[in-house]
Amino acid sequence: MALNNGCIQLFYISYFYRKFQNKMNYSGKTVWITGASSGIGAELAKLFAQEGARVLISSHEAEELEGVRKELESVSTDVHTVVFNLGDPDEVKSTAEKVLAEYGRVDVLMNNGGISTRAEAIETSIEMDRTVMEIDYFSGVILAKILLPAMIENGYGHIGVTSSISGKFGWPLRSAYAAAKHALFGFYKSLWAENNKKGIRVTLFSPGRVRTNISYHALLKDGKEHGKMDPGLDKGITPAACARKMIKAMKRNRKDVLIGSTELIMVWIHKYCKPLYHRMVNRVPVN
Image (cartoon, rainbow, N blue to C red):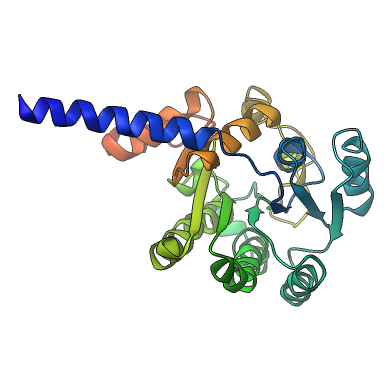
């Protein structure tokens, strides 16, 4: 009986704690979002702006980024563009230092920018592997390392990281992409373990099918862009729906979040029924 009462009390404490967390907002916070010229990043910018945050949006696509800023003028006048190339580590470092110097702090870093592939491992050059790793993994690591000391000094910081369900298992034509997405988990889970008692939060997102432009810009074996929407992605959830789930998860301080629809079942199949995963891996398009 005592055990049952204790479980009930724990349930209610957890429930109301989550309810309280979900009422948190980002008013007055400085939020920096990479990959914000379209898709999930642009939708995240809108949601953070609606909550009264100062929003810094980044991409290497200056015109598209300015278009997002103009679209948000009716929502907030505190949205700023920061144009730089995630594939250039020196530029990533210098940009992070400039942002800190100009804005004083970054409370929330959304490492959302990235690039995918559509090429088999045997035909993917090591240069392409390095390009994808630089953009999808190292760029965010550089930003996190530069911003982290100020976050710790301020007693608060939240790093949101857009991985993928391809970061949970391997998949055809995604070797470079999946490798970079797997690496994110090792780094950011370690970063959280080292710093969570210093006020640092980390949330890793693993979207499945989301209707973004990622397949258009995915790299083929010759380095050219894929240039079309994959059928699987075209059936996915909207970037707006994905962004809402991401914000909700961060408010609840969740650590590891799956986002998508029926394709997420592959995560559980891989985890709990490896033989079935091995039979399905060459047959089912995921994203």
